[in-house]
Image 1 (cartoon, rainbow, N blue to C red):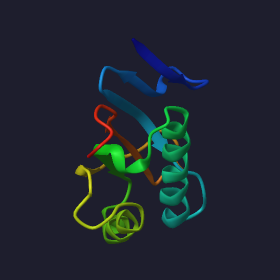
Image 2: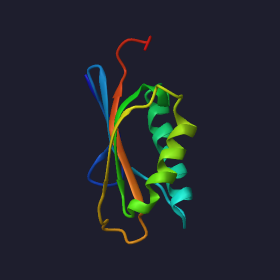
Image 3: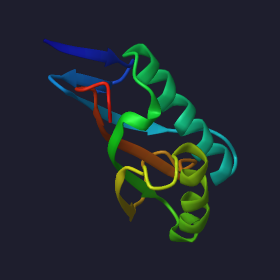
Length: 117
């Protein structure tokens, strides 16, 4: 069975298929990078809550930054949301965004299989 968490746009915020959930783009809003990354995690948590999954089930993320100078802060923020030694695999890159106010986006993969991780 495939379950989709829809958005008003042409993508799903998540698609659950088998033992995995594929997170679509999650971006935050706010004037600063700090506001946007925390808001992104808030949206990711909301998406995962709809599937009864906690944040620590994320196994892989891609983080897209507008400015590479935000990388050190991104590293610190990840330490606030994930336990030490339980970080997801991650790829971070820089890019331009269609929305000029967007400073970062996150997508990823969540494992929902076995309850014990």
